[in-house]
Length: 304
Image (cartoon, rainbow, N blue to C red):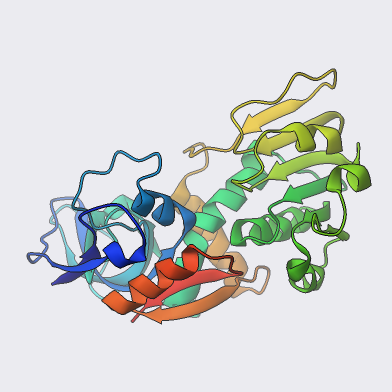
């Protein structure tokens, strides 16, 4: 069985083919045949060795969709051949073994590529909107990093709750964001968002990893606003602010989140933006990570 990983940190060329033994699930595990994996910025940071404790050599990857091949003796409710999605480990491989309680059944009318594209971005966006920011009807929600997949999903989920959404993203995202029906798009390469949106937001959701000092978020927030961000703290301020750090949480489980996201997708209440679908080969993973290192729009999927 083949997998794709690396023995040292660096650029996309560090990837190589790694032969694995046949995988056998433990009592409460399943083994799946991988059909699609989602490439995201966490994969890129790990490949570069940034803020990671990975032990090398490693097979990277977290977001996977595949068909159940084997089930452990303690597994119930998952049949051989069932299409499932999960946030797991070591997913850049032809087969992946994972705990059965991580797996979510994928509806028949959702493709493996669509399902994979929703896993990490969708979970992040859903929990940001529903739990950390607790978005309410008629609030003005300002989304920083709106051009990313997480940002676009955040916009759609906030709109479903009846919020008025303002998006901040470079101008080349304007058409995509306008098509989502956002109230206003502010492009930092054309306008200063702080000047345009000062004291406008009831809620600021910052899903950008590049703008996390909190100063701009504070400037755009009303008094008594909520700010949800990857930043670890905010600068000192006289404003009364409810500040929430975006981080993994099981208050809403990943499994329940994915089930809801798949329902919204299959009923046309949510759309995904897949930029490219690459072949499930060594070259496909190298090409995908080359694209991760460059500015891109939409999700990158490696699929069979």
